[in-house]
Length: 390
Ligand SMILES: Cc1ncc(COP(=O)(O)O)c(C=O)c1O
Image 1 (spheres, helix red, strand yellow):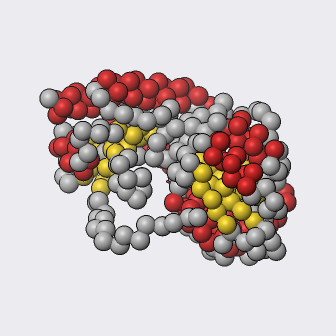
Image 2 (cartoon, rainbow, N blue to C red):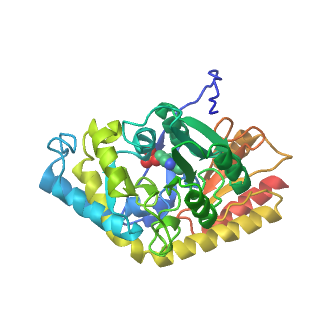
């Protein structure tokens, strides 16, 4: 069963940072101003640098000028601007899905969609079960908890463990497998074919969160479920606009049947104001540009692979990362907050990730490489790390 860490002795503090959109000095886009110092940002989800794209900024301003600063109502009342459906139609074509629905944040989507996937009529816990990868994002875990459905968590990426549970609970009518495609903390990637085969064999819905794959993987940049390969009506893809799309909000692509359930029963869709025009404008531009950003994706993945190799040579374990999310783990030096502080003094902003966000013993520095981080900057980072290693 799902458990939550009840340790409430935390002392998290908000870090205050400044950003720049300086057009004449785009070098500043790789940096943030923190504690009075300009530092390279190795901890941003703006994977393709689109949040500073003049095209997105222009479109965002233009939509505000045309439609105002808010849609001032939920989509089911008077906030369903016709252009939202145009964006949804574009997105669904990449997934060859029957329907796409745009939501507020990815967090809001996961916590409200998971409980309403099966509609409102089969909520009894003995009729529904969720199989969730142990390293799935907090928003998925909370969605499972809110659903009230029995939830079993299989070992990370362990298809045998998943199959064991699928066999054990095969008698339950409504079954849902949930996994991220690229894992937010480890940067590793699912074996989609195996998941699809298991979902088909046991007649399950398959829910893939592409938050960290969008912009990075797939021919069109829409993640691995957008590839032109076999999928069935029970497959659901979700993504966020808050990372590689350089904006805010999220989307789900699914069958008409599931979309109907959501429009009728999903509180996170029904009882909330539609995204504001400035946000929708930037989403619209990013959605249009995404398929053409192939070279940016390629360079980003090459730079990430270069950095991983060098980190491994320095003795850091980068787990099974295959993307631009790179965990840096060193079993001999586990004071990651200290490592992060030393890197900060040398001009690099990184994040130490501690339990319960990651399992005990797997604390780390989590690096994210964006298109603003050139190979030259990576070399500077390695130099800093090297001098500090001595
Ligand atoms: C896998 C995954 N899903 C969903 C979310 C939530 O997305 P958003 O930031 O749009 O709320 C995140 C955020 O980090 C995530 O990593």
